[in-house]
Length: 287
Ligand code: HMG
Ligand code: MG
Image (cartoon, rainbow, N blue to C red; front, side):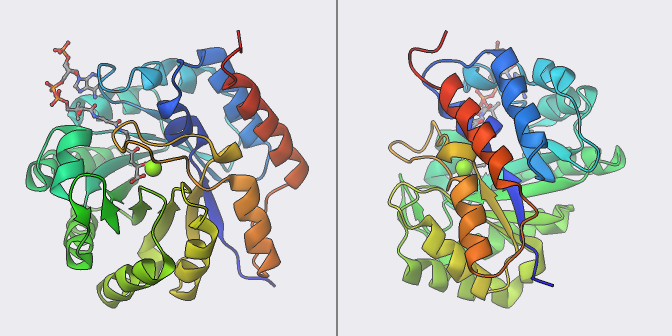
């Protein structure tokens, strides 16, 4: 049997958080319901963050209340602090995620805290989620380059990833937030990180500004990473990483992995249908 790779769908969160116009709650729900029919087992559907910082994600509770949950699918959300965790738990998420940065500049711009302050803030969030029986994913942004601080020292990626694992995160998603990293820089980062953190705890989160994401997925596969984040239709970007484009497109990632001989469990026709919805609801003229 082919080795299996798990794709974690980011479109409804990382994708829609960056839309210039706020997408209607009903449209988000339609997109998530379509994604639930594709074979995806993990979908990030919302962020319980400050609506002043990311107004596009203000309706997380309504989104979670409106979707038709498919058995076997984990619906997750970002939680930056205790307030976010409480709201996410009340909305009935299956998993939450805390999000740190390997660099001080992005940490300050994205969550208004130094790395060390952010880790202090996340510790009770992770503990509270685990007490409630909800697993926690950890993100580390800017693992190769930072829009504010330049190239990232891989040792900083190790340090922040290890701190999140020590808190109780089951997985660390390594963000190539700018989406332009040449493969040799991703090799250098993974070479350092996987010497300390087993690949089974890692996921790859490649934005695709420069068309290098699929090549970087191949690099990460060589290091034993078997979980990758992507967004249907390549939606999105991060509002605090100026100029960065969306995650690698889910449909392109699935084809790439299958061409390499991996199984994804995804249905290409249903992915195409979800991509069509993603395009429709993010068209500037959409009403
Ligand atoms: P702050 O301004 O330092 O904190 O923000 P605050 O406590 O002063 O809160 C500001 C206001 O937000 C207050 O309201 C709070 O009550 C409210 P006010 O009193 O002014 O009316 N507030 C909240 N409201 C709802 N839910 C909450 C919440 N918390 C505070 N949970 C904070 C600090 C962390 C809250 C803020 O910086 C924030 O929300 N940042 C999130 C930014 C974000 O979501 N970025 C995108 C996701 S990360 C990403 O995309 C990268 C990733 O994809 C990986 C990669 O690609 O690298 C994961
Ligand atoms: Mg991202």
